[in-house]
Image 1 (cartoon, one colour):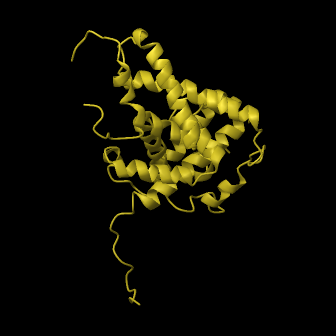
Image 2 (image 1 turned 45 degrees about the vertical axis):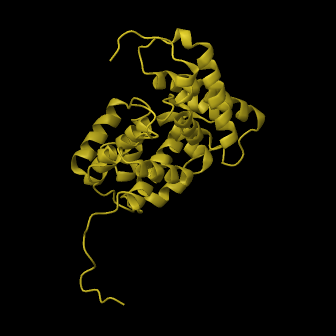
Image 3 (image 1 turned 90 degrees about the vertical axis):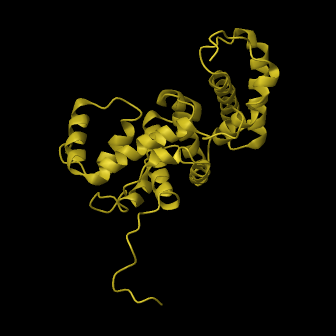
Length: 66
Length: 201
């Protein structure tokens, strides 16, 4: 039931949404769930942060540049 | 900033070696292979330095070259030994561990305080490396191919010889694990105070 997602189902869609375009139904289901779920709201920003972190890898530099 | 670009000298390129090595090492997890990839990338860069467009930084340009070398390495390795360490059909049963029977998180994700500030801390990246190393090799490899190398899922599946849905499962597993690991080891839960009414032993 896409309109009554559990956190388990929602978090999987959150992750897959980083890798493929979700269907309209999936997006609606996800929005309904995340709208009322703090845990999945935090999960969403955390997986986005992981992306930023890997983009920034290996991080602040050792005097080479600048 | 000078707008005129000139070809970077070999010495200028060489300065980036330590940076490139860490990048390659995170993806390949093998010092020898990483050093070879970096060496190949630097040689290719020296040979084509005249073509450096100057539109991006030298480092960005070098990383672009290095990514190709890393992918070559991965391809060669996967041709040489077919994957066997992890099940070909990865349904992700182990992911149940992250959830309670009713589908809620077993460990509810906590609020991370100003995570973006962590990106300015060297120690954060070391914590991230440790968390990545705790993952199964293919899982870590899929994740870094996606987020470090910026590959699309289709390419990752092809390189790892797995189906697209297995690939999504792997990336999902990686994110769940890394999130939990960083929360445990870096974003320690805020000062919630000691357990109430607890008598210290």
